[in-house]
Structure formats: structure tokens, C-alpha cells
Image (cartoon, rainbow over all chains, first blue to last red):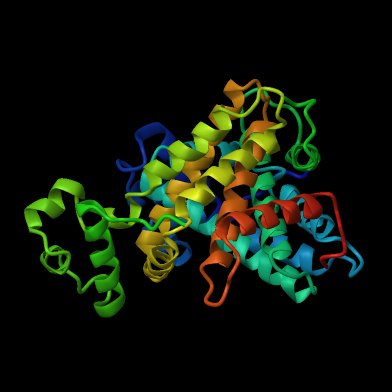
Length: 192
Length: 192
């Protein structure tokens, strides 16, 4: 597996997450983050507007990858299969960022305002996916439902992935969760 | 259909929504809301902590009804069928509140902070539903997936229902959206 080699932006993000974990999010300053990363505050602000932004800097990339893969799915693909291609693409993006993702998740779930922001980002991702599906000719409410399913599968697979001791890859968990979703929707009782 | 006969609490909510629509949410004061409802500010504060709270006062009732119906489903019911009973129960709760619901939705979608709060309430509803399903013996990730599906179906049916000119009931739209969800999950292309 290719390891994620952080540039200045990535080093700042890693330093920030370390400090949020060690000292708490509120107690950490931008000056401390920059120092830990071996960079200046000025460099920090070239990459992030504030210490909150560090936690959401991946949202744009995630949405771009997800939407791009759905848009690029074969025209014959059913909505859920186009969404599955998107899920696969984003699972790949996270492959070597598991530790970072786990630390990030811990900070976010501990702070109501960060959690609200996270939910807003996911809602915006869902809206973008629905829009992409409509452009592919999918009607409503199928487009919105497929988009919501995609985001729900991603969220649930992600939360399973960062649990300590979980050894499957995010890609495997995404596929497994999508298969479970299909079983749940069809009224399968074997999971009850 | 039994019309919703508002008590003091309901009258304050209706007055608030009227004023939010007429003057804007920010420009409306509690004093004005109380006056429009023919009540005192003191009465307002007996029912709501602030003017924001008016918009979210139904969330507790919604969650209680939804969770109660899922918990009370026959033990043999598949997760998605238990969730369907919950959806049916909450659709009934809204039956005679369509105008109120539409006005509320317009105010909420126009304000980022209200939208964040709405998303947080829906996430909490989903968590409560997953918890209820786990208590029924449903494993993970099936419980969380069924819960997310239930909330997504509710949200999407609700947004269809409040569109001007829509004549179907929320209950019909919820059933229709759930059927569409099943079609989408199974990879049905006829909706593409």
C-alpha cells in the first residue's frame, strides 16, 4: 500500500489532529499546530482559514471523487450501481488515512458544532449526488433516494472501519454495507 | 379528517410561523408572536425557550411516535417492515399540519443554523431508531442501515408533500417513497 506522504498541508493536518487528541480541540492554538508541523503560522493560514477548517478540508475532494465516479458510470448502470462506483472511489481515497480518519472522527463527535458541520457537509454531498443522478436521467424520488442510500452506506461503513481492531478495508466494508442495505430493503429477516 | 385545534402552544406556533413568513425570522420578536396569538410573553416562555424552539417543538413527538411504532411492531416483522410502521405513524401525525409544515420548512431551509439543527434532530432520530431495532434483536449494520433508510424516506416524502399542488397525503407519499427505495436498492433501472 502506498503511504500517504504529507506535504505542508498534510503535515499541518496531522499535527492538528495529534494536538486535538493530546490537549483537546479548544485548547489547541494555530501557533502550536504550526510549530508541531515545523512550519510557520503564516503557512498555516495559507492552507486553512482556521483550526476548524483543518477537519473539513477533505470534504471537497470527497464530493468531487464521489460525484465524478457517479457521473462517469456507464449510462446503462442502474442508479444504485452508479452510486456503488462512487462509493468505491471514495473508499480508495481513504485507504491510507485510517489513523487520521479515526482521530478526526473522535474530535468531531465530541463537539456539537463540529458534528453539525459534518452533517451539513454530508447533506450537501447527498444533494450533489442526487443532482448528478438527475443529469443521468434518473427521475425523482429515485435520484434523491439513491443519493441518500449512498451517503448512509458510506457513513455506516466508515464508522465500522475506524473501530479499533477492525481489519477489513474501507472498500470491503463499503461493499458489505451496500449488500446489507440491499438485504434490508428487500425485507430480509435473516439479519434480524 | 379531524382538524388540528391549537391550544396556547399551538396558537403560538402558528402565530410565529405566520410572522416568520411575513417579516422574516430574524425580524420577528417574541413579543410580536405573543401579541399575534392573543397571549402574553410570559405564556410564550412557559411553552418555548426562545423563538427558535418553536420550530423544533415537534421533534420530540415525532421521535416518540416513530420509535414507539417500531418498538411495537410484531416481533416477526423484518426491520424494514417495522420501520414502515413507524413511517406510517408519523405520517398520520402530520396529516392536518401541512400548511404549518410547509411554512416551517421554508424558514428552516433559508437559515444555515436552523438547517444544521434540523439535520442534528434527524441524526438523533436515526440513532434512536437504530437503537430500537437493536433492542428487537436486529444486528449491525442492518439496524443502522434500516434506520437511515427510514429517515431518508421520511425526509424525501415530506419534501414532496409540501410542494405546492401536491394532492397526495403524506402517508401515500411515504408508502410510495418506500416502494421506490426498494426498487432503487434492488437495482431497478425502470426509474432511470
